[in-house]
Image (cartoon, rainbow, N blue to C red; front, side):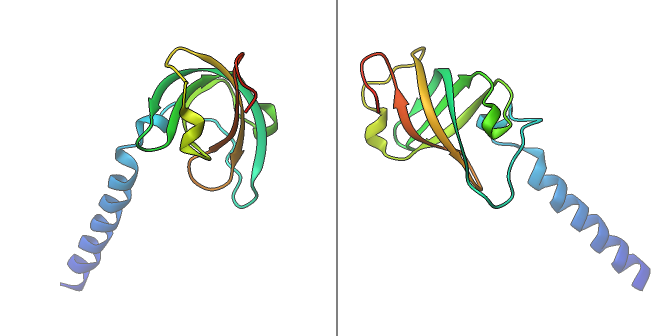
Length: 119
């Protein structure tokens, strides 16, 4: 009986671990092979094209080139913005330059550069 209980506990533990990894966030789907620092916040500058704007969540999805200072290859990924006001005037398909911080969780855009603005 004890063996059955231990086997059941192992199966449930493995099932829970699989469920936690089975449905990744679509905004993070293209982030494989990306270096993610464990504790320190790193910063970098990137250039990319906006593929999605979620004003309600204060987030952008950007298809960007490599960002060597963060160890990121070219990819499409989601970012939070430091301030929702940063989204004003942006459009899907627009090319931008941006500054990003990577700590734990979703990266954060701290500045956006377009031909018409510098922040």
